[in-house]
Image (cartoon, rainbow, N blue to C red; front, side, top):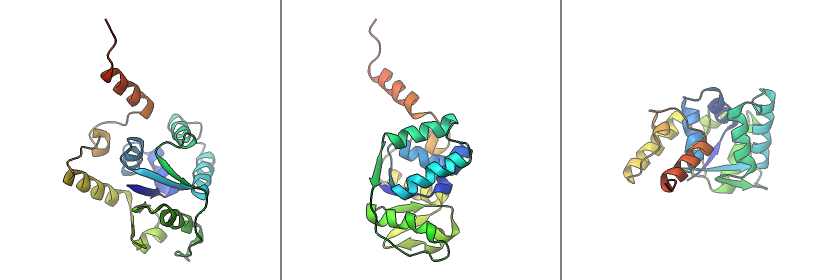
Length: 174
């Protein structure tokens, strides 16, 4: 499932590691959704991280490394110009990316985007609503989401999780 994540959700995921924005980002980190990003969106992520001094924090640094490695993302170099939001034209970059990537959702806390509700079949939801939709869809398909996303355990950094999974699959020889 392709999803465009607004900068406010991305930044909120770093500020509150137990909130719904973080659970959404964990879906990306655990490869349950594919993050759709354009050059403009990535530039805004980096600019805001820098402005808040979060690029030096462990969580921010980890996210930046995942972006640099293009981890589980659909990166768009060019997108169409769309003027769906007149009140705040800078928000159009999320709609443009979603249309070009053929995303299913835009997840945002921005009222200008949320007021659209949908654009060309792309639903625009706040993190809480998106998680409800994703959880219901996973149950219908018989999938189990990681405990962190369901809300019952703390977040585990991706690299540590990968190492643990590798150890579980290949225990040391004795």
